[in-house]
Image (cartoon, rainbow, N blue to C red; front, side, top):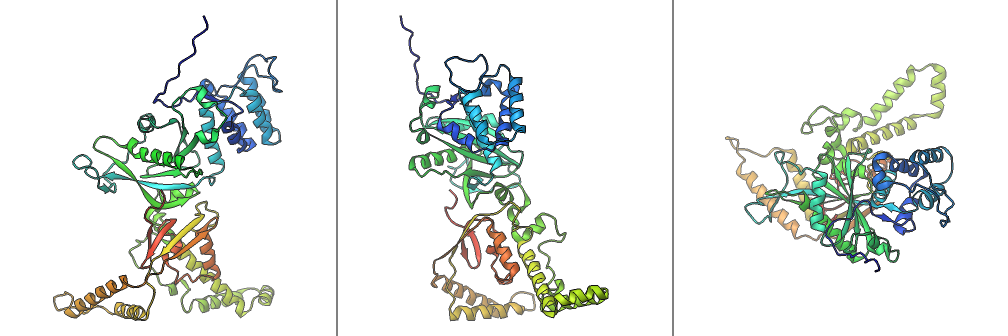
Length: 510
């Protein structure tokens, strides 16, 4: 009697980490070819540890006569460890290591956990390879009493949801399991305070070896999404999908919507809201939407968050003249340089005077003033090599077009601001001041009806605000008149400018 074939039925469970994809599968060879030779060797050494043998074990044993592989299988793990130690010391290309992995020591395929470790290692080696979107966890107010339609920002008394790996993945599987097959891998990065969750999506109702082994349409059947959880922060980062297919965009949205549901608990529900910040650098997201103090202190305000100065930001700072960059700043610096020149020895003074004249001292003073001004506007941010750059910044200008009446009103407001409003004997504002305030409110309503041209400005580059800071330092941009949103103090990549202030654009980031 012939043996009965195994019966495969659909299931709601996730894909086990021990399932292997064939070594010739495109989802195996493509990620390995992206890693460098040292990263491949260190990753293989991690696979060869005793604790990973149940899932990441290599092919060991006697050589098969029917196998045409040029690599003889190793007999023991110690022998294989010595082999890869020699490969790490010896110079050569990464192709040598990739071929030995796929055609020799792991000829029987790589497990899903091994592929997840490859993706995480690639993220560590190339931190700007993906584009990330920052989302914020917000609590649902009155989730127990009401229908849960109102949202509220978590206060200091509210506890952030605790990310317990097994419980979170079990709840996430309850939300995603009926839709597709998934594999989860959690890893904490040693280079940043971030926990990475890799979600491997497989569009199949089965979770067996046969459903994963199909080579045809492999790229259309599987995708992976990376989700980053910064430590001690109410924000979540999600990697943007490179696929343009509407089917996978819909599945990605379902996965993102399932994350706050998996973090919720009875009488405490959470939602994810867009923050209008998208970047390729995880360090930029941690600085702007992480657990540090710089979340609400960007650009020039960063000196107060990092403790560079001890005074309060509400205290008036020194004027520009005190720093030597006011009206007499250039002359003062020039006079100081002349005094220093007089104190130098004669032979040193002679050589310096040949190359620097009065114009050179003035230019040097102007350069110093511009650098001080850029430091005041940008603070500790906007440095070219800080690794926190935004590669794209888009601003939508919605300010009213300046007219003659508007410019007259601005002059009147500036003159009114210089004088104190008249008060009555009891300290209350006088009637004339109240009338002026009502006139200003009427004028503001008129401005709402003014023509507002739709102007969009988009910046591209490796570090946009570092480039703007350099433009201020060389004098191409006036640092005194430059608006604050050009310094990146609001920490958004897409925003709308109204009345000189930028705010997150509605619907951006999702």
